[in-house]
Length: 217
Image (cartoon, rainbow, N blue to C red; front, top):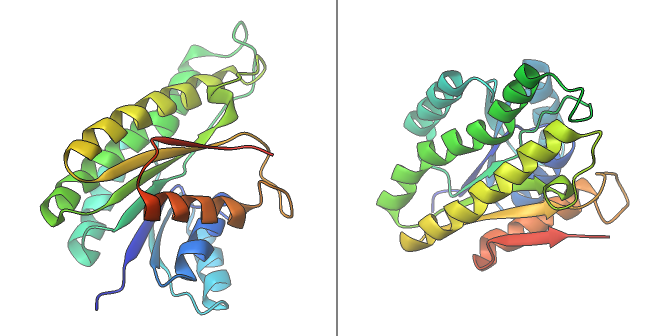
């Protein structure tokens, strides 16, 4: 039996590592797409110590073509994943009256366009196989925006809208898409512990029901 595979786009040593641990402990092979090679190596070492063997690649999620090329290469080499989690996030602090529009645009490329690109990359393979889950890491700023985090609120709100649209489209193909809206600061030994978040993603993938799951304290 082929080992199931999860791609984590925008993987880091917080939520991304929690997702990799949760799925890896259940027999999935994590494919880590990170922005920095050092982060990829560090995560692989941590997972290796847990007997979880992860592969990966380096790509900037805000660069649409680079991300598309990277995911196409991974698909050719490894095949279409059973699960893709889009976890990348970027934000420039600032009030709406202060933040530079050009920087909001750059953040938006990471927060939303990267997610859209990832979805478009894996959908053909998932449709051909007839199975697959696409999961997005949402945030409480989508529901209760903070003025000083205007760019993040814009990004998470748009990501939530994209997730709901993807849920509707994927459902028509017999596939699943959804978002986990994390309403709090990610911190170990709290309701927002990275592995708790990873476990919530795993449950979403297994149940394949809700367009949105809201994680609260």
